[in-house]
Image (tube, rainbow, N blue to C red):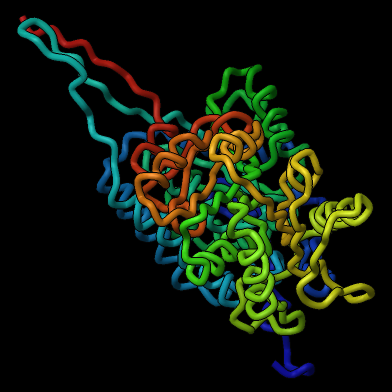
Length: 482
């Protein structure tokens, strides 16, 4: 696009969505483009009255929607997916601006979000016979909660919000989505666009900061909260929900480890490990945040990893249309936090290997791919999740030792094992204290696989058929047979 060409997104406006209709707000805020730091659109801030109205609309809609049939809900889910497909260019363009993603990454996000609605149109929970004899039959049924509050993160706004919204709708719940204030736009616009294919009040959206989120978690008319984000915020949400005994799903941070054994083909494994570390500049919940390589392969792995990063992840800073999975940090707080990890490593005298161009003095929240070679286990870059393109790579020799080092309390979301011996790989995977282990593949949750965190990485879970149980109450019917 030439510099004088009109911006097709410049006139787009954004609203909260309450009771099936767009709603403005007395207050608003702006987010900046992570690539350029240019101001984006006005984003409305929901008031306490907006939340009360949304809860009332959701509870009214639930009286009918909660009794809908699986077939009726499947039709709506497919229609919502169609809204995403029909508006792919618009929503991808908005995502590019608010997250800093390349066009190919933004398009992938819209398509993947749509797929979650299509998937849950084909999956439902059936009644099951829990017990039966000549005198008694016990049937387990699954009933929706009512109004669910969904609080979405900023790294994959449409994908991660759609997991929550699709799960809620598939089980007969109504849902109010609160996007991250760092990425409010695509979710607000998508919710607005989806209203014509939904009963009013079934899917609503309210933007705002921590105060809006806290009101949502404390509201007596909200029965359930699903949150994806940091451990610290998740702990506050659980405490807030305790007042009304809300059910919660918390998908929290994961300082995920990748374990590379001595028998692997490095030519195959290195590019895949790199992708697991640096997709979306490492801003992914299950990205590999720590890499442990067997000492006998360490030097070769490090040299290959560095060369691959130089070839593949040298960022195209000025071209969002370049087909890259790498990009800037999505907001200034995460940029400053991640840069702090690098500065701490340099201050401590660790070997820091920068791959690519430093961006000092230039606009945008760019940190080039950075390797920290064999830092100590008690270093900040190993003990805490970086959530950016900073990769500590350490040596190991003993399996029990590397498992112990991998199993930190804040590393319960995911892990990966890279091992040619399938039996050995599964043995290692079973010892890792995480909700998901990826064996010989980059970490990426699958729509059909239950996804949940252990230890500090979460409570409850989502995805797959089992994930729908997190959005339902199980009722047991004890039926006398004579």
